[in-house]
Image 1: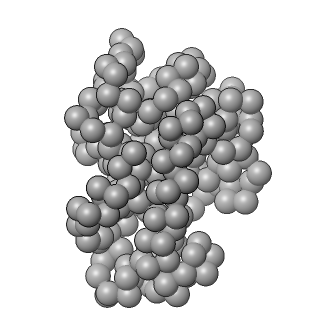
Image 2: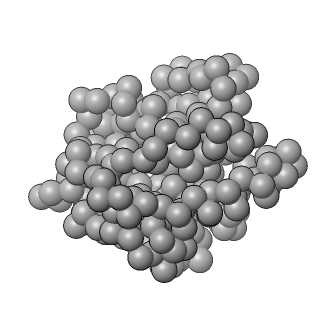
Length: 235
């Protein structure tokens, strides 16, 4: 049994429908964040309707915080499709953990599965915190979460199985590939988020220097409120 599945979606609701059709393990609650603001609905899902897009990390946080009693959460992109028994294999791995744990795709896999889906248990959230939604609306939040998990000693379990990422298994965001406006906006915000990551950790992914956010000594779960930065990243 999957306690909660959380999926933000902006453009490709057809791929979201494909994802839902690949669920071959019972899911107690499916939470979709409708970042399109268009009123999407599906009787299988609880839907969060924000007044402006929450972004990917913000959407994941909203879904997690709306279901605080869950023992663990499965979060994923809308362009994921699970293969036969993948969900059971993921559940077995996260439920076998004795402490904070993330189960996700391999870090260097060509299909870019790392945190395109992720099973995250309560102990991990309590130790590391939620996703840093300062990486708005998307990109570098996955690198940031992995960095924090590494620093916090969270068990990181890789599982690829038969999971498909993308429309035909091609890497890269189908949102960006499918929507010219999103692609144009992302060309601006991607670099803003990269610069924020470098400022936060003293270097790009793989070249980090700081062991605390912004070398501040603050907890790994901390990030500053930056309203101007948020406004600058709005698509």
